[in-house]
Length: 130
Figure: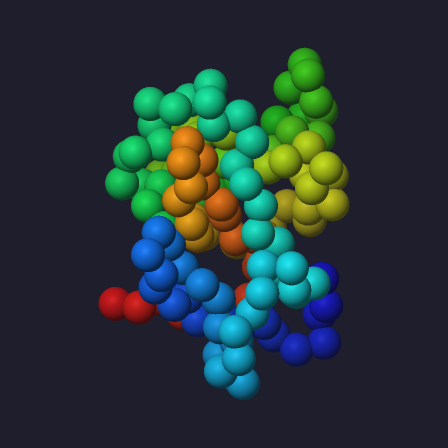
C-alpha cells in the first residue's frame, strides 16, 4: 500500500453494502486498487449464527485481533465486531502476514453466507454517509 498521501475514501451506498470513492478526486476506487484491501472474511461458515448481527452490517467498524497462539496458524488475525463481543471469522491466510497490526477495518459488502471487509492503513480517512 502506498503512503505518499493520506488515503481518503467515501463509502457510497449500494444494494448490499458500500462502494468506494476517492474523496479527493471523486473517482470510484476499485476493490483491486493497490491502496486498499477488500477481502472476504474467512471461516464465516463456522460462525454463521453471528453473521446477521447488526454489528457486522455494511459500514460498521470492526476489530482485527492477532492470534499468535493459534495452533493452526500463528499468523492468524481474527475479525471481531468493534466491541469485541462477537467473532465472525478471520483475515484470509494469504493476507494476514502482510498486515502491520494497526489497520482500520470496515464491513463493506454482504454476500450470500459471507461478508467482504475493507482493510486500510491506520492513517486513512473513511467518510461514511449519515
